[in-house]
Image (cartoon, rainbow, N blue to C red; front, side, top):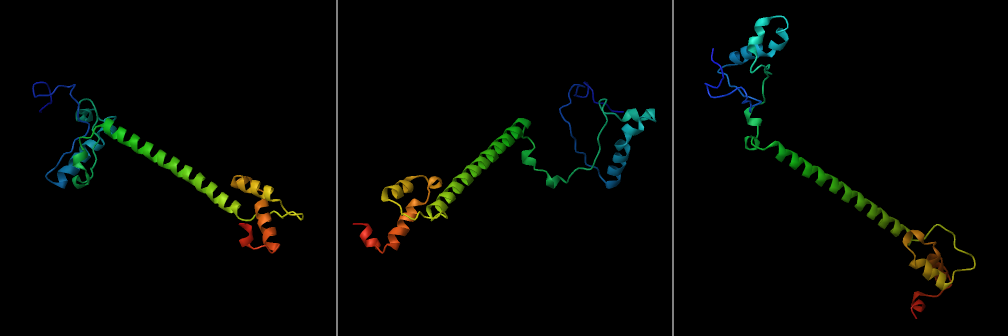
Length: 169
């Protein structure tokens, strides 16, 4: 039986490959190899001769692989470090995008609230009316802090019959 040893070009410490793709001439040969090695580890508990099926003192994991056309062969030499750095960059990009979306959501909610507050409030206007200075001070406040006095002043000004033409004089 042929062995992999230092005379044949490889030492026992040289185990750089963790996967091997084997091509058989027929499906019958493939099925035979699968039957030979698939249950060898389980059968070795009962039969001592199954230990001869070990490869470098390790059991082989035999299974049908995906089709070679599904493998991206150009990426076969991409290192583990390269894959990790790419996935880290993608996760950072995703979190930054999520943070930007959250900030934009807060900004547009605040803008929407300020638009709603710039329109008339549901608060009833005082009976005695509102002075110009109070209405102007109310208008200069941020949208969420307005009390609606500017709206009340404009309503009273319009109800008094004074047109908007007189307001600019």
